[in-house]
Image 1: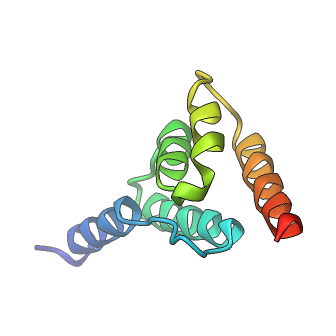
Image 2 (image 1 turned 45 degrees about the horizontal axis):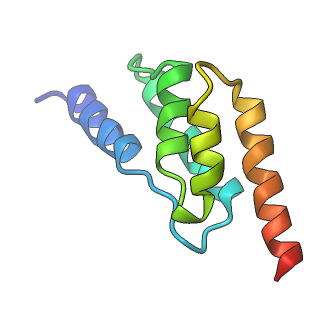
Length: 97
């Protein structure tokens, strides 16, 4: 197996297994998803915007279930709106604590 194929498989798996931990800052999670997607794109195996958005939303921690369901109910939502919704929920959670 060539190095490129092996790297592609490794990075694909890295992208697919990127999950948000319960106590993780969502901005760090969003950055990890973006980094994994960008690394795949550099190998010519990029994910579509819809794939990256869907992965991001479905792999948020359970603390963001309401936001996830709201986002998934829309056929297309720009990533900037996803980031804003998640950031606002995180900020509100920090204020309440």
